[in-house]
Image (cartoon, rainbow over all chains, first blue to last red; front, side, top):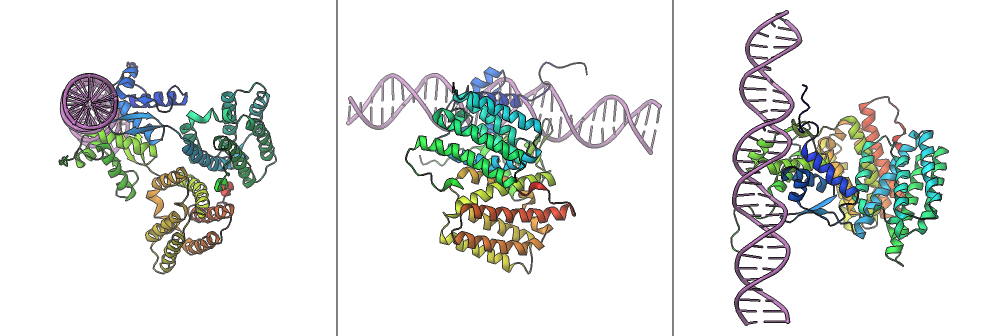
Length: 231
Length: 231
DNA sequence: ATGAGGAGGATCGTATACAATCCCGAAGTC
DNA sequence: GACTTCGGGATTGTATACGATCCTCCTCAT
């Protein structure tokens, strides 16, 4: 078995195509509405269109791209309404995951989370919304990723992937929210360190996320009542 | 355009294959572990293997089938652990959806839900686990389906689809839980009718589902402590 | 009897080929 | 000038073909 073989070893071409496209979307090189032409992608990846089609179908099932018969695939657009709904879903699931993860967090996890939050605090002066959003994401990820229920993690991660196009711009819309955010993060860390009951932790995360969402909505639709979406 | 065309009109073949397979899985004609042979399915549906492959890939992305390179696809197995995790995820999301749906429920919705629950109550004598589980599903579906957040609904429905193989057998394992279940349903209806706050409704649904899950777990692993999964 | 090895068949993975469909612009008509 | 009609090109949808891989079972040596 000395022959490493030219390429067929390892992953299938459809998998390569799948990850390649997904990464481009995540990195926002393919922005919403971007047209995914099978032939072009196939050429770029040096394969036929068949594996690319499969990859696109998988991405469609995940909601990252939308497909229209006889027309083709494009990177999914996320409008205001979808964004709101997805954020609400994330809030529900991530809060639960964080609550379940709390007692599995190590001292080092908490240290890292606090370090991230301190970087965020320090960056409030020269405020860079993209960087801040990324750190925010990292902070929360540390806190929920120890959740023993992989299914919840998958749901949260999948949902964030769908929102990748907008993810970085939340705090660009409502920079004022950043200040509150880091404070709430610190409170959350204290809560976890004190071994607060899961219900309290879940509540805290929910309020935190809901607060950010409310700030965003207030910016998008000024004057409208918050509505009964509060849970 | 008077020509109805032989078949090419309407949906694509991959869509046909997708729905065909999905329906079989839902109806449990394809049980977990069932081998999905592309060529065979393609023959049965009178098409080539290419659309079938795409369909399978989509189903894989939804978690309904598992795929192994160069080996093929089979209907996903759900072991105990996965079942527990999925049920917990459902509990979290469905409870939130039910709470959000509560104030949108019409008098007719409540009437229908109560009717279903009364059929369930009446069926407690000649207990048929499958029928009972189906009614249980219907009852809860009525209560959460008015949720204004379609994303939450999609998550719940997708999760239930994944559990289709086991769904019908829950109450077969723990028939004793059926009695409690219908009582809790009635309490839940009262809560909604009284316009209870969303938090209370969410809590009630959570406890209800958690109770059923706990009963199941107690049956599967007698004597083990419930664990900190309570939320 | 038992385990290593290999031949054969079944099935998957991908390329290529071609028909079906759609999109867009140009020509024609009122 | 605005609306309809009709190509032509681009792109998708599916079929067919064939090499690659895996699984089964059979053979054979120990």
